[in-house]
Image (spheres, rainbow, N blue to C red):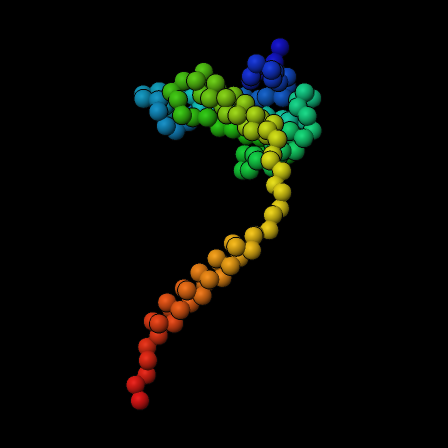
Length: 140
């Protein structure tokens, strides 16, 4: 069947692994008894529908969430119930994949104009003159 993340993205069952842990945070009397926190592990190599470009970008932007073996680990413990934490973790994974899917803007390198260079140099000269005026004069 798979995990439905967005209307056009369904991940295979074996690419997402959920583990429930006893978590800190909200839970009232149940906080020490019920495992409500969710640790989601996503295996990008097991999701063939993700383009290679998206997989590479995921590895770049995942940061500390990327484990050494290439899995992405997301821990959700904001809510009191397993279901809401699971949905939160899946939503965060969907956001991460959507961010990786966006095309990065290509930056065209430009050079400062002559006017910009002149303004910068005149401002530097003015600041230098202000600072020069602060020096103490020795009286002989």
